[in-house]
Image (cartoon, rainbow, N blue to C red; front, top):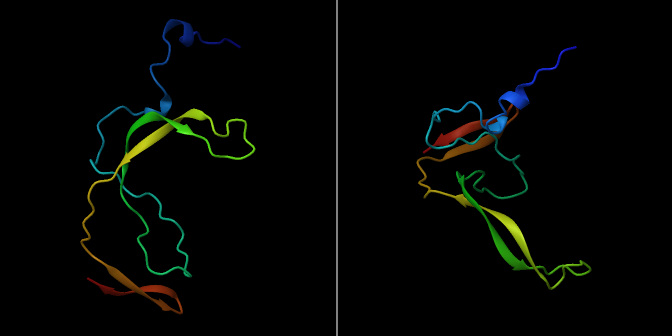
Length: 107
């Protein structure tokens, strides 16, 4: 069994999670999954577009009784999410049928 020596000759340039390195196909992101609908709750907004803008850190005081860091300041990482202004362009109403949900009215 012969092992390659890629790591010694040419180390990897960045993580594989960001491959392929190319321009994005769409400027806005897309909602890839919606949360499961809870029928006991009233009608509500199920998704909202946003994208990760920056990651930084904050200094906050911990208020957790019994913790070693209770009433002490700790530094924590935080993520800032940018949400563009939302404009409703349509509303779809559904009704329950024996075969499942069906579109009732689209405005």
